[in-house]
Length: 323
Length: 302
Image (cartoon, rainbow over all chains, first blue to last red; front, side, top):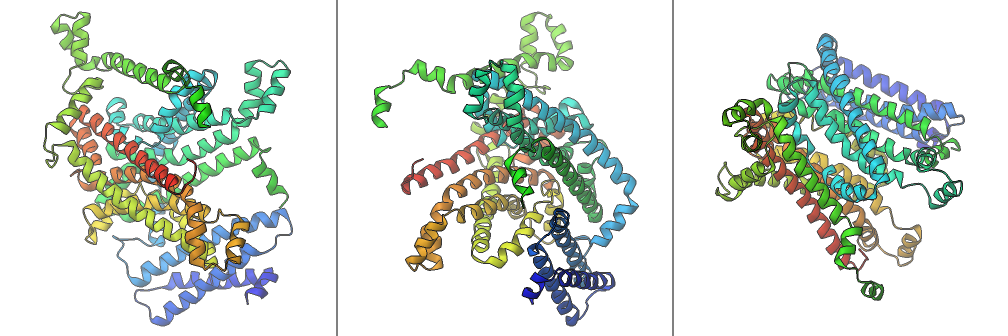
């Protein structure tokens, strides 16, 4: 059967559509404690979606567009299956919403409390995360250039930077709250400190990544330090810098949310999570998690897109064109 | 190699000038000086009336700024004094002792790290040996990391508490959740790192799967394992500290931080931070030490 699927893309798509739609209908109509037959049906459909998705990931893609669609479809189908199974398990097994709310409950909460979620998003993400991420990354980058120009500073700061990158920096949150107040400025300060060291370590490594031959060539052109920096070494450092920006994007979101546990005005994602947990409103907590996951992935994806545009020359992107 | 090293044995001065010891020392010293200097303007809000009362001279300014009971920024020696008082003058089993809180955090860190490392290694071995698992398990493992577990640590603790899990285990589970991912990824890479040539050689020896695993795959995965373990133990500690925040600030470094922030005990926060930093770098160093011993025992150059 898998052999047939391998050769016939239409069979794969038809199988995915039919089994997915059936699973969707079951997830919508499920009531508490269905019979054994229901669960066998669920397992069979799950297996069908699984095999279909597996076959889809192995299908040959004749054009770049179909390749892109296929590479996007496989993880999306996986994610949708997880949501459907989650819904089926929670509703079918009758799990209490205090323990784990169903996706449908979370979606209802998402639409009814949209204004609150939006306010939390603005407070935590648009203010604390973005400001802290930008300041911390920029500061790390500037200090890295200083380190690069002045070897003494590099030998002194890099070991400390490597040490600090492994420390539980979230712990400075109470001190920052004491210094910068309860509002978003203190969270931005925590994020700044958290993002500084990964950028420093990565950018210093990146600035030394250009080859000896290339540097010798620049010297034979009589290029000044600034020329070499701007025309050779910064472009060569870009993959490392974007790596740090991506690491920092995840660090920043988690740092801002955790910093809010230490004191905040009555708005913000971390504040909402900690208070709603106390009131056992787990659907609201999961709605906040959904916002955090969507915002975090979008942020990451945006950086990855800019990276692709800036470091188009890097082998990891050039090789993809040939596929 | 040894000959060359002994022939041009470096003098102390040249080591200091070329190595990183002197630069690091100078930067640390500068930081401490800036710290002392910064304590004066940052504590100004609290110290101004006291300085005026004491006479307002330069010496009074310094002595008042560096000896406040609840400063905005404590001077380094105040933090050291707090560390000394809570580590050496109290019995380690009293809740007033910092060592007690360190132990609470350390025990859940180590339990979570151990469980996470075992889970990660087990998953990696399964993924490498069962082809179907590679395709079916990997998406779940990657999807599991899209949930910001640190951000929802309070919920996990409360939910686990409602089904009767309290104390050490819920905190360790959060550390475990953070730990297993880097170990799995690193070990899958490590276990698949032997050349096809070497694998073919094992096949010509008619080696069984377990022999290939223990005699070829495992030894070549050891460097990857230790690199992942260093990452894992650092985040296990962060996980344990964050997991202590919502438990009502009973015990542990996280509780110490939260308590200090509630009651404005600045020195207590700084002392807890330094304790966390010492534990973190100590744990990473310990893993690195074991790595060097393992490398020596296995006869590889380290």
